[in-house]
Image (cartoon, rainbow, N blue to C red):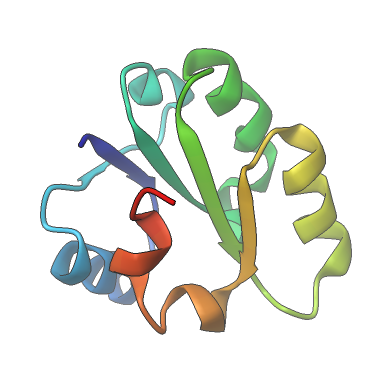
Length: 101
């Protein structure tokens, strides 16, 4: 399973890497083209969900963001995210969040 993560915060990135060692990290939506799962930090890549979906139409897009930003979370779903969750819930178990459902 190929996992591409759009996560740049160093602490968050280390948590993703520890939970999903096969994850690669990217900043350009085109890097998601052949991914099975894409993880998106909405606080930093909120506007990238649509372009990521265009490059990876078959990928499962899992997003996380601040629980207090209802608008940002809603926009992610509208842009094509399959899973939209608060940051705190995602980081309880990142491996489970990216696992096939």
